[in-house]
Image (cartoon, rainbow, N blue to C red; front, top):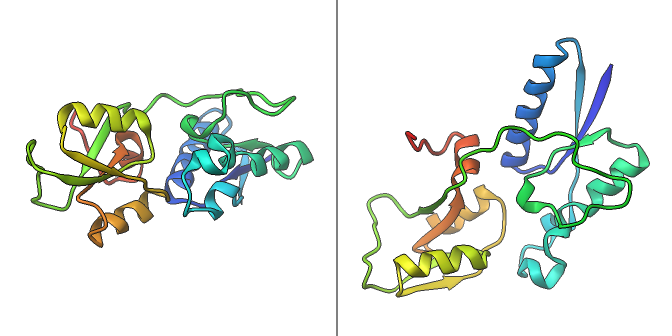
Amino acid sequence: MKIKIGTRKSSLALAQTDMVIKSLHDVFPDIETEIVHITTKGDKILDKPLARIGGKGVFVSEIESALKSGEIDIAVHSAKDLPYKLAENLEISGVLKRGNYRDVLVTPAGKVPEKDSKFIVGTGSQRRRLNMQRIYPNAVFKEIRGNVDTRLRKLKSGEFDGIILAAAGLERLGLYSSGV
């Protein structure tokens, strides 16, 4: 039996897809899998905040269409990218163990922001802004879009003094170990 798995092309999406494939092989050792890369509206439009181009659904519409047409059998998503309501006749039918739920402030090596100084933090999340503002009241927030690799490049180029990323994503990419 062969299962076609639809996913986005980012390093994180592919790492998560590999986790799903491993889980499938643990239960069905002889199963064949094929990864089908799908580019979504959210992957194409990177110069606008998500809210301005359609919210969370911009990462799933094309994948939902591929499911409905039979092009793919299952899809792999980060739960954070899913809209509140899925397309008709689609459901979440499997979930892997939850990863590290924490957020991480990533800064250039050796640069720790002072609580009293101004520094620019990249995030697209209102929740992350509010949480960070409690710790660093002088932080200035700037919208950031793109996959983990893109965001890290923007940090390295000096566009930001820090960026907020999900610990789970960094762990899945082998870029972070919480020791917890």
